[in-house]
Image (cartoon, rainbow, N blue to C red; front, side, top):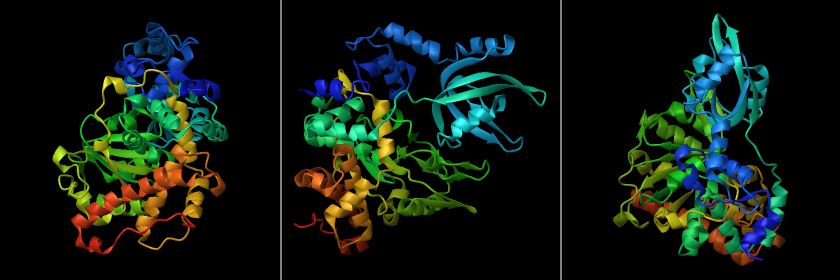
Length: 474
């Protein structure tokens, strides 16, 4: 039974034919979890689909700026309720004491809207935070409020087209070889496993998912341009936010005291800061201090407001060919923020992005693959499963050495375990050689690369060598 047969056998409802699906939807700027929903729903049994039909269905279910006036006509002039799928943002009007929403893709802002109590309860159940955006099915009409007519959200239903059974996913993993499982993961990421020239290339690409599966995994990746960094962090999961360049403020990341709104780190599983070579940090010293505290223990305080978050932070940047060497100073061209050894020490691991090939058309998946929405929802749920971190502790036993190094290696090894071997739940389940090769050794390598940079930046770190990691009983 090949991987296609296995997908059809074990994940029949969670798989679809992604035949250059990214090309079909690129002009619509939809995240791939929304795209997969439409392809799955309107495909034939053999995986074929009529692209014009799907485009028409998208048009019917997701309004655009061009069709928005027609909806306004119905809700304002005909007093009809309209229901559709949309990207939404939520805010609380403190002065007027009501909840409002925005539709960024339709240029509808908070001043025009109002959320019903029922809709707000449904939104809160999704753990949605202020300033983040999310997708859902909304029903709207209009309502008179203080002599103003508002667009009124009567009902909200979260976008979740699949029932998720994590235990089933874990059991199904037993029927796939490791190479097949890598192909399954890459397919869920919209990539063709066969287009990668080596297992190292495949694993390096999969490494970008580490913070998707394990809480508070903090990474830095430096890579050449065109290796797909932005795509993974902006389109793959609704639980991940990519900030591309510009100015980053403490309010945006942590807590906005003016608007009493939680920042990005409280809204998502992963926050990725792109273009860290050119990104500007407002109030650099304050952000530096806040980031150190957050990277250390997931806590942050703004004014008298204290919060804790499980979000992983990923720092992304481009690097010149001649600097692609972990024994050289690779952070010298970045913001001074990343040349602070105390901050860099709190980053768990380094992704060698130059091991990921530049994206080509042949690297786009063009066959049966796992649905991205389903897969990223599984990773989101696995973040809460402490079984794997305990298993890593049991496998490694007592280790002497620098606390941050040990913590970083264990975190990364745990994340790899969840991604590659989710069916390992007890020590008896574990293939020790597989764990050593694909989880432990890779975690040590990623942390060692951070260590190399620390020793270049600060002579104090030359005194602190990496701990020796051995599997218990060896």
